[in-house]
Length: 139
Picture 1 (cartoon, rainbow, N blue to C red):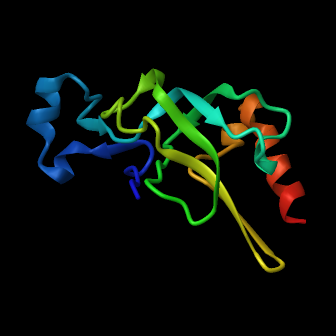
Picture 2 (cartoon, rainbow, N blue to C red):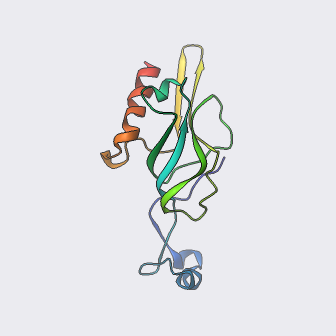
């Protein structure tokens, strides 16, 4: 499983990277950016209860997404090939083809795992319905 660093800015000095980040030009007042964010092209499984009402491919705004190599359930959302569209990412191809959300049923128990916040700051109109679908799925 690939897990991103914490969202936001991390003091470069704390990691001994101050000079290196200055040379690369990605610092603001001795901070280095750490987590990917921006628009990503996503593939949605049409049979998944999480993806009701969605097209097969959608563009989602994601902040600090987590990309899973494998899932302990049924895959609902994956990063498309060449998924990164714009924003910031240290590894633009690292998300390609990886799992972004999945669900699992075991007996009466249902679980949903998102590798992204579907309601990030309340302005993610496209992914908000995924949360509604997830709640509908588990109840």
